[in-house]
Image 1 (cartoon, rainbow, N blue to C red):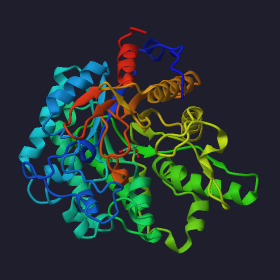
Image 2 (image 1 turned 180 degrees about the vertical axis):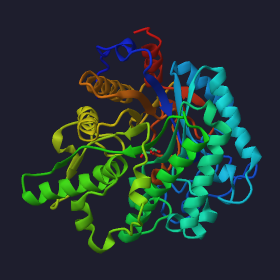
Image 3 (image 1 turned 60 degrees about the vertical axis):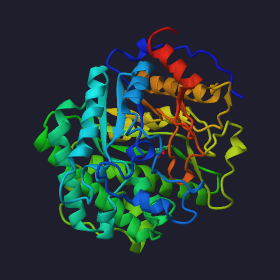
Length: 445
Ligand code: FCB
């Protein structure tokens, strides 16, 4: 059990312009799956597959955020944050992925952004947090050039309507997860298991990213535009040279594949030769599209990883705490990662766009005293400050997540929220971690 010791830093240590936020994603919280003309996405379909979701659940109701928008906006404001990161459901604003726009869908995001404006909170919008319209997947999904065109149109339309009201826009959330978990391992939608397809999807998504950046720039030139990547430091599980080599390749597949492509316009040579026949087809000009300059890279950090060629890595072997996801708690890894990204890529601006933890919460007398989550957040904020003090331009930190929500293949069993959701009544109750965050952000501690 973690002790809750007050951290030795204050909000002021980060300076006035630092972005403090909470993050969510459309499919994980909105619900209202069949309301106001929303179209289906690949996650609606994936949830109907037997054994795809641990508790057999789906996103039909989720946190019912679509119908409880005002209340949730009040909760965000109560936290004392100055920013909110959310995603737009593509199939809510364009049910078939192309074809007519759905005004009722846009109305929802208009109300969301207006509600943030009224409360003095910046809006950080993500275009794609995994919920590809099903109609586009039926046509070949990310392997179909025309689907890339549709994404660019979608990026342009969202920017045209909302660009001037946003603090930032992000094209994709975690392309590694989309491609590898969705198309190689098949544990996320759409559930394909084919490495060559996965790597082609990884490439095509980066092309879609670069094309969308150009479209966003043409529509709203001063809008801060970026991408969000999931990254971790990766260590060899032993001194065995095979493990060292594996760690290098894993780093290549997770970090360098995306960072080298976006920052330098090339893929890492060692990864290309490792992929062999599964290397994606790259058209002339693709790499310059992918490396279109952007304003920030968002970093989603939860844990570090170990690479092993023998027995799978035993997460408890370091003696560090392990979360309900089975992820080691390792705040130093965040500082290490941020410093490395700065040193190797000299990115002009980084933001921690997701960081948080699932623990088994106990509701006692209606309250969740989640001191483990609280200290997880405190220690990762400290790691972010550490990186800033070492000269890394990291200008924002977003807690994942505002609310307990639909945690993809884990369903509702894993709770990441700093606000508890009772899935019977949908009642929201701030947990201890959120009360601490408010005190911290309002300078009360
Ligand atoms: C990230 C996702 C986010 C959430 C957290 C726990 O990979 O971006 O939606 O599921 O993990």
